[in-house]
Image 1: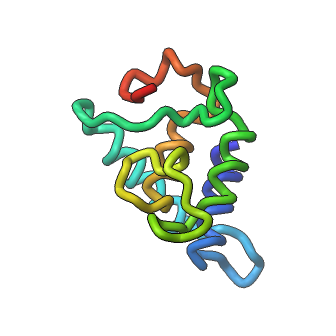
Image 2: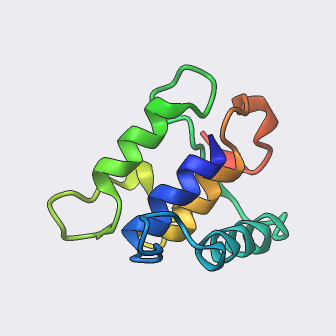
Length: 113
């Protein structure tokens, strides 16, 4: 599922080959962002379980997709999808969600409820 998520973000960022496949560069960028973010243990994030079922699932990705590439002031912006609270729903938020995909809320030590 994480590979699908990378492909979706890569396509959104215009990082695709002529065959429509995500490029290794795009996947590498997302992986690097996720690793950098997760190496900041003192930092707090919003929980990635948006629908409250106790896990970060495809339903949560779908919600984020509706608000992706929006910022405060945009009609589509929703702070529940802005996990790092930088006032934009972007690739950083996507990297956080991808990192926690499939995880239970109790496994996400750094999220704020």
